[in-house]
Image (tube, rainbow, N blue to C red; front, side):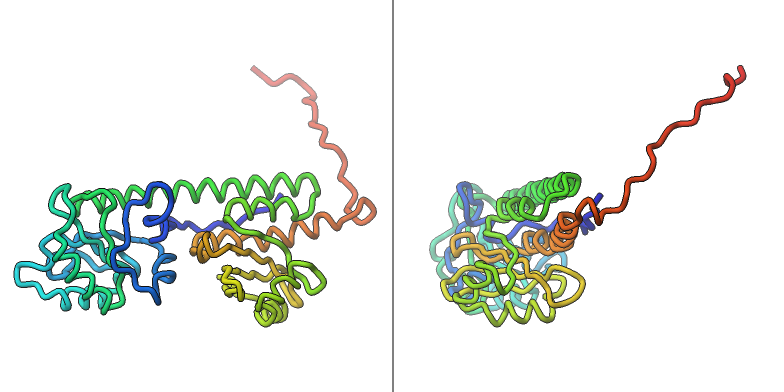
Length: 303
């Protein structure tokens, strides 16, 4: 029975998760066009209420959301200094909360927006006007929900692999499952395959050849097609030339976030296992051992 080595990953919420979908928590006001996509795939490991001067009660982790109170541009604070202070702390984005359940002051939004944009940080506001503490609570709740969803995703992957292995099937069912769980088209790419030719024609041939010859490392290799799709390549097997597991997410789906990259890369070992399992014929498979027959007691137990 296959075993999937699953590292714990509680931080699976991305900034894109908070701003997209049918029920977003946050909305961009001053996105940074050159880096909006990069910011969108950051994992949100932390959300903290910061002071009006950009100070934080604890160290901010990379990609953290710095939630500012509505007086961020008052009390003598210089917005440029605030934005630069948050950038030095490696915040991923700035959220400007309102006073109570009212939207932030337009003048504050404008001044802080220009400053955060200059510092390379996007500025967001709550979709539903909320005080800073409530924004932080909502983001933390979203993180817990995302972690629970990811645990279910990994459990479903294990069940899928186990069922295919027991049935002696190849990896086709696993590839279909991966596609559904990662919102991508997933297939094995080899030089003679249609998938390889399509990706090669779309500008990915160099990346494919490199992955086939040298592997892709523990995080896979991300590449963009000429058409703007987001492709993740992950080498299958222990030695080259490798087959390549390719996952293709469209522009609307966005780049591969870290937790979905993890799912695809983890599945390479299981893809190789299922491929070998399906290739075994009754003639080459080891003969089954004798049936287990429990020994009968020779006498009734004492007492």
